[in-house]
Length: 522
Picture 1 (cartoon, rainbow, N blue to C red):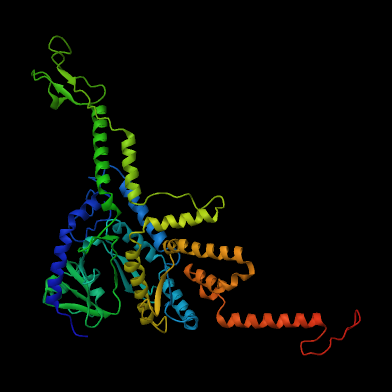
Picture 2 (cartoon, rainbow, N blue to C red):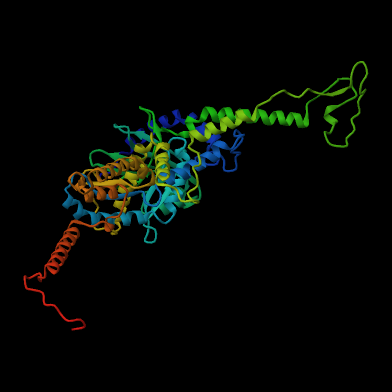
């Protein structure tokens, strides 16, 4: 592999950083009011012990964002986020031939993300996805953990827009000790400055840039690690068929690389709610502690007066024509009705999809109620579902297939083109989207059976219809009867029917007359 041009990468990084800076005010608002604990301290912008909630006076947006992240995991990932299946263009025989090996690959890839690390990284990424854009790094692991999932704070990552609105470059920068960089890249090439620091100050922190750029000529992703300390030396390069990053955008405005999330949509209500809460707290503090005016008569010294129970203040007078020396200022008439605050809180929760449905436990629910629940899940993310699938599920599956193949866990690594081999999303959200379509098919079958009875088979292919419904619902192929098994069953049914008819007519299946036997005879 030819070594990438470092100057070109530095130029592209500079442009991506400018795009990052232009979106920084919107991102800062989201972090200040809804994600105050998530901001990274690795880039030096915020200290680890800084006050993170000095702008947030109401916790509604903070709590709703945590619930949004968990709800997104439940709706988009669930127990089984995807299945690898044969494409719709293939014939029935070709699909049945590929179903078994593709199902095996599905089990391996989904098993690689079932150790809990992916779930934790996804929920962390979901916190920032609520603000529009998230970032997760998927790396090849060791024998015990074949794949590692690392959620990277979005304020450490700059994105470059591709020609088709996708992401063609991911530029990650973070400070590491020189010792840690050597541990990450034991065979990496250090320049003069890093070599000297490795010998004299191995614990000094320096910026390490890890950039991943799509190479249109080779149709591969080039990984390049370098440090501004030695701006002319590439520490490590690597090439892969798939991108090691997931950088989903919840909503995206045309022409922009970064996304918009529910937090951005709810920001007017979030700011209004925080301002109203702040003013309410200030009014309450004034009512409790009060503001006092004092006559400048040379007797009362407010700097020496302690506002505590049981204290005595020396004043010139407590009444009379001139009035008391110290008097409480009238309390502010700030009457913010709780109904207004509750309306703002409900507006924030609704925008951030923090709406609790009836609990799953309890009395048995009807099929109509379950269907409505599933449709509600689909409606929550309806505007972002396609993008979430394209930028999370599909690249996740492709990345896991490549890692599983490189580690020898699967024999073949099929190219996912959505024509011959496709990624079928089987998460609760996808099932909810298919629920309405399946309901139409079931209603049509029921109508045909009710009107035509036995003649319904002339109109409806019942077996094919049920198999199609099972595929859309994500039923495993091992539970479906294939063509050979179905033909064998039909042959057995015909043979059994022939035997019954022969017994009724008094003839054996071979045409010989049946010989009656006495009761109890052997």
